[in-house]
Image (tube, rainbow, N blue to C red):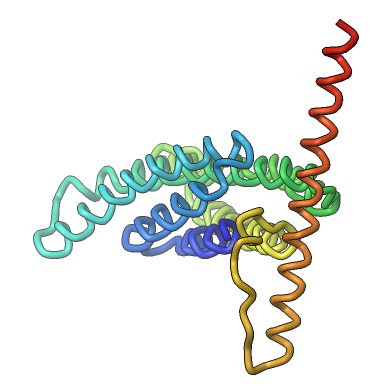
Length: 230
């Protein structure tokens, strides 16, 4: 399922200290997840494109980190802040498309609470742009000594927002099932609670498929009526 894979990829973004080593994993996993989800709506498709560019950027990050580890690069220190700022901009764009995509598909399957939660989180994505701004060297000249405390508060807000988004993605994983899930053979486990879990997944998948089928059929009937009128 795309949302489960997306949860794993987005989870790696919580690393705000040594992200040069984990961003490549995060980018590639989210790229795979958004590729699976890209057929649902344009937001996920745009997110897939952004994840692909972010993965290339993450590859550049890890190459610089590896080279610097064995042969320190003197000029790397001066551009580290700019690299971090660009990273936060990518995360902002990715998060925006992910939340917007979840909001759209939640409204389609009438998961109203999830749709409202995703929509309410969209403006909060600006925290990544604030973090990008505070990565700029000139900010220390504006805030002086206080920049350390303000920056710490911003990073704390970033971590809390990422955790909040992880909860949203997890809810999407639990409440929204993709049509392709119907083609999978039911799994049987030695544990009864696992079998009940798989049964609930199968039930949600069937309900979603029936909803999409009825929606397509109603759309087709409407077109036929319009054609007769003409």
